[in-house]
Length: 399
Image (tube, rainbow, N blue to C red):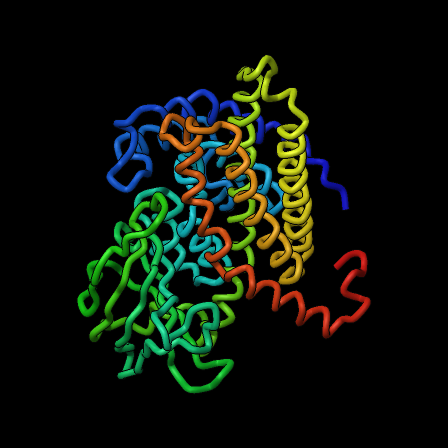
């Protein structure tokens, strides 16, 4: 496997880097560029999105015939990493969660008429979306088979009752993908549906306050008390909800890693710039061996994460499900992100703990990395399952 980027992808990567440096990183220092939830404000977002579209840097994961850049998974890895050197980057280029994963799965499994109605507006940036799966205990979280929200068929409609929470982006979403229980079959008991924010029979109970800065639309608690969904808005076949979830989450977990690698590199960049100029006790911080050890180890952990991420991307591009490779990348990159920003704050001292840099923003955001789309412990259990099944072949070459 060769990790050398094709020339056209490398040119695109450098174009993203130039855009981030020229437009987004300067914007981060402007208080008026933030909304009340510490993300990019709508006026600035629309302005930056217009610039990104004008420079041909829009929806990298989508096919060209839908207005995207048509990148494969390896190309996405290079693009996303550069994009998230700014905390504003992914949403500006239309490759932020949860829209990113929702576009991917709709493009893969939706009918043509569903793509026109439900996918294309997200690709165009006209609407936002959310994926509605996670529930409070005793409902489904990391284990989707525990989902209790139920959809019952009545003629050509499905009636939904249930309770969801931590639904990212729900506060601003117009298009929703819902996973609900339609039978008691342990493997084929879930089905996926599409619904619009204006349909009656559901409500946002609250926007859940969280530790870190929030994605647009926050993380919301939803109540379903009779939502009616026409059968024509069912995704895939009845009982394919778990399959759809697996299709979506495989790539979505990896795109998290791609973005987090960009944040990790940004944190170390801030640290490096500071220690190269800051003197104490007659010596620059960057010349101290203890500082060099911290930076060197953090840099190595980031690069290990990059290699695991690109290997998983390569495996996906070969048609493999890459569950083992994605789990490895998810664990490693989540840890590397935390280590990088923690190191950067330590080396910046009080400056790093203040809001004079984006380090404290990244630090609070980074804590979720070991939780979202499967806690690190769950992914380690997945790896152990592969080890038990494959034995020494766990370390085989190729896929």
